[in-house]
Image (cartoon, rainbow, N blue to C red; front, top):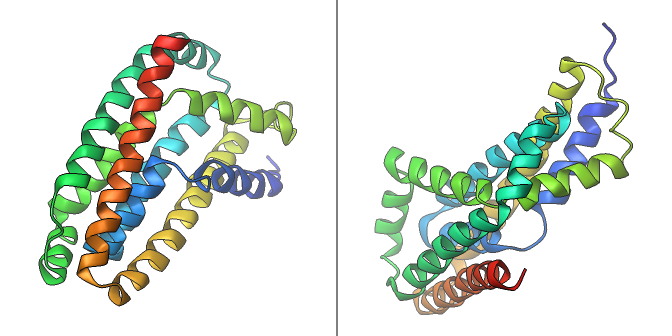
Length: 212
């Protein structure tokens, strides 16, 4: 069966478009890259990329029942995810930054990387509006009628994951490099600002539950 290579390329575009806008995961990736090193920041973003791949699969494989269920439950998921972001943001803002050597050692352990990955994977999954964004972008790129096989859908999903992962690779790399040049006192204030930002996103999600 002939496959259209452009499906993979369009998947890359979708992955980048979903990942690049600044949000709580971006702030978390920057913060962990600055204080914990490249690996900690990259695995933080990689968890979000994996969740993007899951939601991309829902859209690409036409799992309308799943998409409909997530749309129906998005209020409760938004409330739970928002509360988790508020708690995480407060924790980040109040936690003193470790010494650079200790931060790198903690961030690069298997347990530390797995925790960073799992946390952002679950936080991203807790935002079901993401799948609605995927459906809208799929329609905008004309993928609705061209993904007619499982192999084609698989190409799109692979592109989505790699496009998202490429963004996190770039962001973590740049942030980790800057971390070597920033004084610990400055990183302390960056941690507080990023924690406040993450908590702010969480409060907005919680507020939207009561206002919608």
